[in-house]
Every structure is written in C-alpha cells, then in structure tokens.
Length: 146
Image: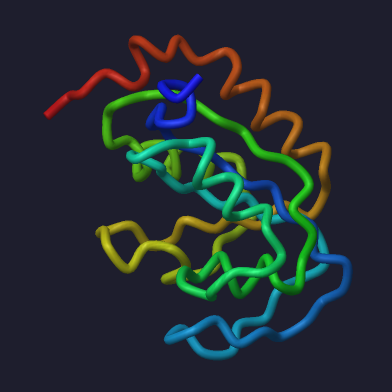
C-alpha cells in the first residue's frame, strides 16, 4: 500500500469554470478564464496519490498556479499515468493538440513550455482527449528519446 502511495507519474486535472471571470494567478497577475473546461498537466515524481489528494483539498497553502484556479473552480476529474520518467512536458504537448487555446505561462515556470493549462469550451472535446490518452501505447509514446 505504501508503495502505491509513492508511485510517481504524470496527471491531468480537468477543471470546470462555471462563469467567465478574471482571477489573480500569483506572479502571472490577472488572468481571464472563459466559461468551460480547463485541463492542467502536472507531474508528481514523489507520489501521484499525495499530489492529487493535495489538489483535492479545499484548505491548503497556495503554492502553484493551479492552486489559485482550484480555489475558484471545480475539479471534476483526474487522469493519471504512472511513470518514473519525467514526462510532464510531453504529456502537456499531447493535451495541447486537442485544446482550443491555452493560458500562456500557466504552470510552466520551471520548464520551456508555453503553458500547462489548456482550454476546452465543451466537455465532449475532453472526452476525445481522454480516448486519445487511453489509446496511447504508453511504452512507446512515453519512451525516453533523449
């Protein structure tokens, strides 16, 4: 059981924004979020279970960009991919191929990506994304090509 708790991996948080609103997102400043759905790509190299449990908590110290959004929006789903490889950016790029737009600079202050948060106007588009993730041959797709 403890081994499962510490299993590393990448994950996507599916977040619903009920009404268009402007939120202060740490150093990013004021960011306008359209009504719809957002998918955030993250990693948890010290354990998926603990990281996801933290994201689900309502009471927590605001640390990451996603914490600001989760304080005002609804976390509706989590997609997890266990892996010991550092694949957050590759996973984020995969998600970006299905999104309508992104929030520049969100969640990517520690990498060269332009964003780790993607906008989907309709939930049905997220269902298409989820099917694409399930169909990935993870042993091939997430192979380290460095």
